[in-house]
Length: 317
Image 1 (cartoon, rainbow, N blue to C red):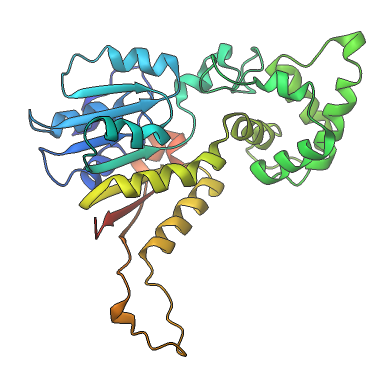
Image 2 (tube, rainbow, N blue to C red; image 1 turned 90 degrees about the horizontal axis):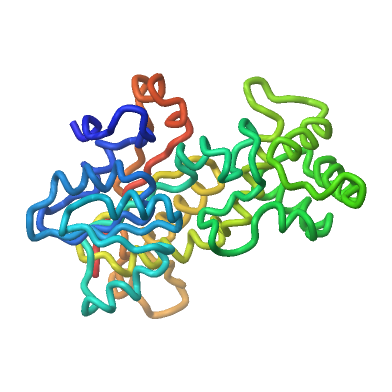
């Protein structure tokens, strides 16, 4: 099994075998791992490909790129940047189409577990949260100037947090004390501010969970970029090519689900017009299904509990 390739103590790749089985339709194709992470999926894909095949792997995280460049395989092409750059990468190769695209969304365990990255409320560290720490604004920098209304919207919309107003007001009130206490620059302090603002706690969930998710999504523009990424993936697929997407929260999954449905549905025909449905172009995608982690995987890796993998196939190229 592909999961045997995972090294002890490393990030556990979710739905590893299921994703690779769904992705690969021919061993000599060109494939894309749009979110390399720590390389679990990429290594498993390479193990199934022929010598003439190619795998293009993208990641924003410099640490992930360092891991990827440590894989001594001439079939692997590593790109430091967003998967949204795929169009340009393929254009440089003569506009080739690919046999499959895999997207494993969200934050990897090494990112969460490294206090220096600032993703987790469980570890005290600098309040950063950037997938690529060399680019853009950190969470601490954003919190230092964001107005209360925008902060409420981010926490409410990206965290689905019912206490968004109380949390935002608490953050802004604490920020007003920056002259005396200094700015909010540590993950632990932000988690404590949120915990004090949330009066009712969900069983089994830290009160800071939704707020940290919301700020991370905003800082990295994850939901804004996802529709662009999905469109890029679709237009890059050859006929019969597969698009496999693993998401970890309802906001991501909702976008993926709607994208698949909208591109697998034949256009509506106005009965008042002399147009037959048969004369209209066929939808470009066929939905092949969705997969959840089994009980054994969830027991071994609790992060897999929230994972949803959706699979679609390009019908017309």
